[in-house]
Image 1 (cartoon, rainbow, N blue to C red):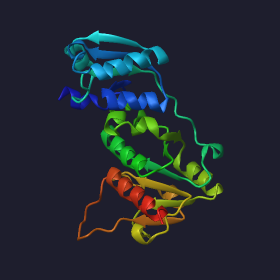
Image 2 (image 1 turned 180 degrees about the vertical axis):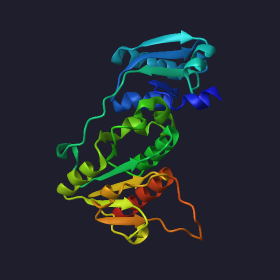
Image 3 (image 1 turned 90 degrees about the horizontal axis):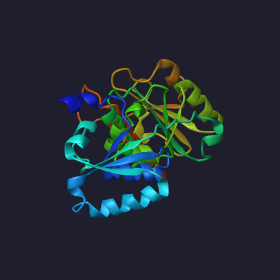
Length: 252
């Protein structure tokens, strides 16, 4: 119960080798120290050998502790007795110069939970997006939780911060199509044109996308259901489906 509540608390503890490897590969932040369960040095000898090599290369320390110490620092149970204390990462602001010429970028507004945000990032990254645009207030304060739920994608994908309408203007000026998920005046996502360069905006299930941002959209796309259904998909689910529709259309 305590761990469940702590998942929304700002944290720079990265849990498990998948997250730690993503931090090393992504090079967005620095590892300060590794906490390694002293009872798992034999069963995790391969991981320990890798981390000792990287400790010399990247200048971090490895501390051998008991499992209770690790449990007190973590929010999940899949860390395998290996966690990392990392530095903060300052997400850069979006500018015309850091956008690729023919890319695919996604903005997600209003996801209420860092786990769901991480799940969305995992799929968006897997679908080949070039970057994610975040508002100034976002879940990257809970970076360790987001990294774990995204299977490391949050440390691998490019991220920028900007408010929605300004971001839309920047992309439009770069020749991008701006597509927003919505219902009114919409076309089915499966019949729309989501060819690159494309900037996709998905709103949270509670507040949706602001009217001022919808006005910036070149097209509004919806996800049709396979039966009568009065509910709505979560923002993470909608972002995942739409990201793969962008991938599908650009495979042709």
